[in-house]
Image 1 (tube, rainbow, N blue to C red):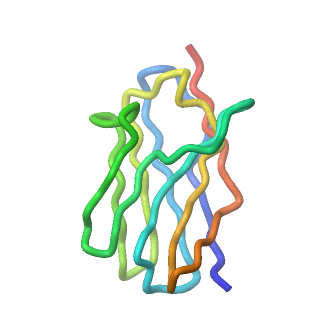
Image 2: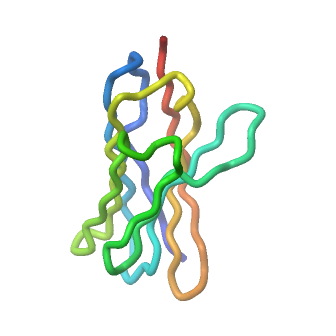
Amino acid sequence: QVQLVESGGGLVQAGGSLRLSCAASKSGFSIMGWYRQAPGKQRELVAVVNAGGGTDYADSVKGRFTISRDNANNTVYLQMNSLKPEDTAVYYCYVDRRARGYWGQGTQVTVSS
């Protein structure tokens, strides 16, 4: 079983920045990433990074968010800049290890206008 501990969410004004972190209890993830779910909406991909460092982003966050991973510490980060009210959601860490996916408990990000 993989345990994921997320941190870094909070309340920020539009145009501000936040950095999310997700620390995993094990190593060897093929995919590490972030999803989000706003009230009344489906969970959606925000950004993922593979073991080779390749990244993919939702169109809505390209140019504003940056995902990175620290394999030595089994941690994935999401740097969020130029935040908008529509970025308000619960952000979930996701990792894939040996063809199994694991979710974090979620961290709330609220962007005020």
